[in-house]
Image (cartoon, rainbow, N blue to C red; front, side, top):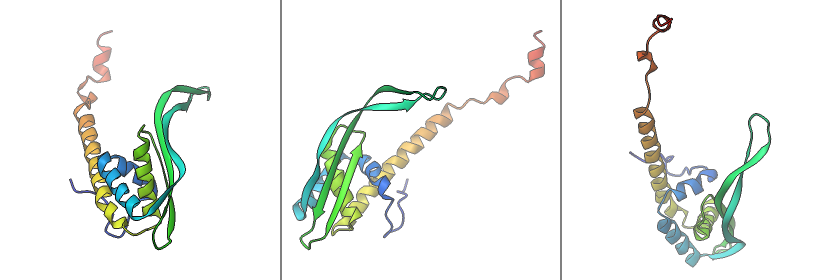
Length: 164
């Protein structure tokens, strides 16, 4: 299946970047961010952290809030400054417990958002993430299709009334 990224020069929306990058191998994301950290000055605006967050939902009948459980959460916020003096900020908040991965995605977010030098290096990574997500979607669709039940083979209401 071919990646369904927009044509060259058009990037997916910023809200999609973390999702696409999480679908890629973590080492690929970290190595790209590390290369940018070596080229540019990267400062932590907010130190990378990970932990658990309470999942809060609302009861549909009463409208009361309840907490069914905890989810892993990591986040980071960075400022990237190039040797030319260009500055951009990036952030990442992930349902994942790897703070180093959140920082790596925040660095990539800053470079992409600020259109800093080297942003073309991330296009293959985003395409690979989109390809993996497309494969997952196709697998889920195939699974749903294979478990579909056809109720039209059951009797009509006239046949059901014969039992009386």
